[in-house]
Length: 163
Image 1 (tube, rainbow, N blue to C red):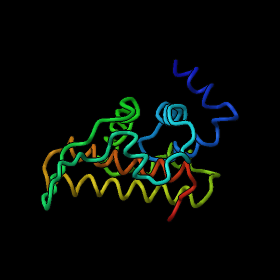
Image 2 (image 1 turned 135 degrees about the horizontal axis):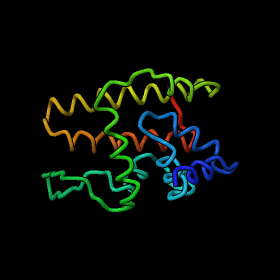
Image 3 (image 1 turned 90 degrees about the vertical axis):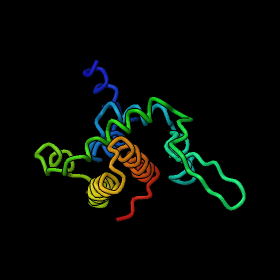
Image 4 (image 1 turned 180 degrees about the horizontal axis):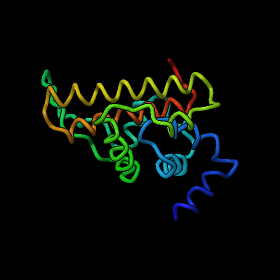
């Protein structure tokens, strides 16, 4: 199955986008291909927040009058992609090592894209640790990191790559 997934990912119509997404720490070929195939055109989401809502990674809200109560994530939208991004987010528990594989993957790519991926890794790693120390619940922290990771995915796929 992995061989067939790699063959599909190497096709001309997927190759560049899959390659770009794989630069993000924790996003492999399967996750990148699933994101590309399940979502289709990322430009249909005007903002990263709307993409996060599509995945069900935004907090629910029960508000009335002056009281605002936010709850757990909505869990609406694409369950499969949400699960893949949460699994990918566990990668940010440990500090990113500049491994030979990651360096090799980032060779020959647009400098802006590589810097964007590094920025994402630093931000998501520090976000995880800040949330763990303030709330103490690792699962909630990883879900919050998955939400932000989806924002970085949206940025790459729509060309909103800001360093």
